[in-house]
Each structure stands twice: as C-alpha cells, then as structure tokens.
Image 1 (cartoon, one colour):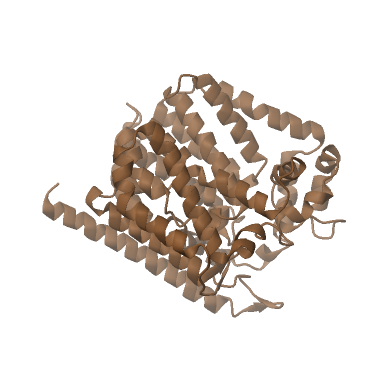
Image 2 (cartoon, rainbow, N blue to C red):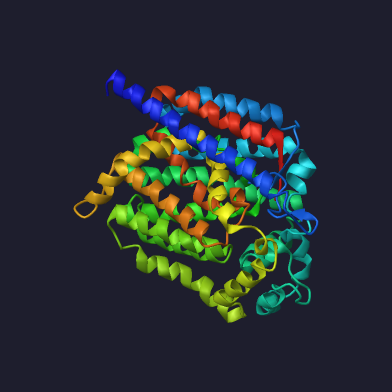
Length: 457
C-alpha cells in the first residue's frame, strides 16, 4: 500500500470514529432532554445517565493504579508479546491479562460496591438463592412467579432469565462458595475467558496471523467495565466458548472434533437456559459452519443441547412458556414507558463505549473485504481478512436482531456483552504501526468510563 493510500485509510478511520462519537453525544444530549419527561417519580428513560444505566460520579479507588498499569503494559508490550509468544502460551496469557484488567476495573469502585455487593442487590440473583430449597419444585413453579402481581414474585434479573442463571449461583452456594464475593469471582473468571475463546476462534477460521494481531485488543476492551461484575459477563464467557469449540470442530482444528462439537452443544444448551436472548447466537454459529464449509458438527451439537432441554422440561420448566411470560413481564416494567424510537438507535450508541473506538475503526476496515467475501462464498470459503469480516459481520447481525426485537430497551452495554465481544477482533485489521496508539485509546476510554461514571448492575 502506498503512502497516499495509507493516509486515505487513516482519514477514513478518523471519520468513522468521529461519526461514532457524534452518535454517542447525540444519544446523551437527546436522552437528557427526553428524560425530563417525568413518569411517576423517575424520568421516562429510567436511566441516570442515558443512554447508559449509570450515574455521573467522578471517583478513584484501590483498583486505579493496577488498571493504569495493565493498560500501559498492554499498549506498550501487547503487540510484541502477541507476535513472539508461542501459541500455547499466548492463549492463557490473553485470558490472564483480560482477567487482571477486569479485576482492576471492578476494584476502582472498591471491594464492596465494585465486587462483593454487585450481585447482592434487591434485583439480583443472590437475593433469591435461599428461596431455592427443592430444585424440581423450583423449576415446576418458576414461571408462576414471573408476572407482576404473582405471589412471591421473582426479582427483575431472576424473572428476566431462564432458571439456569439462578441455579448457577445456587450451585455455587451449595458447594460452599457462598455470597457476593464468590459469585463475582465466578463471573469475572468465566467472563474474562471470552478473550481466549475469541482468539482461538479467529485462529481456526481466519488464520494465526490475524488471531495474533487481534489478541492484544481483547485485553483492554471497555467491555470489561461491565464484565466485572455482571452475570452477563458470565453468559458472554459461556457462549464464546460454545462458538470456539464449534469452530475447532468444524475446521478440524483439534484432534477430537466430535468431542469438541459435543462440548459446543453442551455450552449452547447451557447458554439457552442462562439467557433467552442468546438464542440469536445461532446466527454466529451458522456463520462458523459456513466459513468452515462443514455440517459435520451438527449431529453432535444437537446431542449436546438435548440433555438440557430434556432435563429442564422433565423437571417442569418449558422454555417457551418462560419466554412468553417474560415478554408480558417485560412490558409491565420500565419497557412500558421507555420509548422504542430512542433506544433503537441509542442502544447502538451505547456500544461505542462497550467496544471502543478502535473497534469502530476496525469495523470500518472490515466493510471493504466483506462484500467480495460474501459473494465468493458460493465458490469457496473466504480466508484471512475476508473470513474475519464475515465473522464480525455475523456478530453485528446478532446485535441488530436483538435491537429490533424491542426486548432490548436500555442496559445493552451489559445485556449485549455476548455479542459485543465478537466485534473486537475487527481491530486485527488496523495497521500494525498504529496498534499501540489504538490500544492506548481503548484503555483510556475504559478508564474514563469507570472513573467518571458509577455503572449499575
């Protein structure tokens, strides 16, 4: 590429970043205007700092020095380490670095408010752990306590998810890992593992070179602000490994492809009983099979999903009944007054802070190879940049499907984590000489969000 062409690409990146910033600023300004419309005792958006579920509260905390150190180390040494480390070392190193980043950001809000108490509020799962004494009875009656006005109504997060979410924390409690600190550690550990899962997937579908270039950007992602600590971070980790195992099975990137496909099915089944919204990940799964040009994993995938369906249904919980009842409950709450016309675009503006400006520039660069890659899929599977463009394009489609459903009015910076993490590999398309600067920008954005805002849930 000539110097002139590189400059043009750089200017286009800046235009894309500028447009994303303008979109977010508009969402903030218009959101504040709309929120002046009072509904009851609150603004109509039911948000403290629209479009985010957050409050303006500049602060520092015990995690601040560690967060600054991790951000600086990744920006300076991340690209070099990703090139030089052996693959077997790189994958756990990415996970470890992402975990360190997530813990440090969570601790900016302090141990109590930032970690131990995050999952113990009146709307969260841990408040209901003691109510589950008999698991079969709990599953039989679960749907009967979702709607407002029902006896012993479930808190918002328990009612808003299939029973697998609460049962996870019940299981931790039963084995002695009781309380908010252990629940937070679980969510951060599993949630931050998305980084390893994504880099494994990119290598299987797009090649090792792009996987290594993407690896540093999976660490300082602003998404870590919400992975630590929310159950949606846990959901993101589970679903990311489902896709990674499917990619390994479809591309024969493992010595045991059938076992990998079975594992993918088990994780897909678990994901569906953790969050209703994760059903749209079938789009990403279909993309993986198309890129690999293989349907061989499908029978084993189905076999892996079936035990979850059989077990939950036999115990008395029918997934579709839970979902249809949830839709009714959803519109009994804040969704009844939150305007669809605002959130259908402000949700996307919120993702600017979740994925960061480097990802915006990467997505801009992915648009170029996407069209020829899709056109050529009739003849052969795309590779390299084309395959990566298709992968992040499929992830964007899952997000858009969730958006138009009307079941994602606000709080998508947390709810869409399982989709957002798959946009991050687009950063591999950024020029190598600018990687350090983009990484610094990602870290700086996350630090600003976490130090200027008190994020909820």
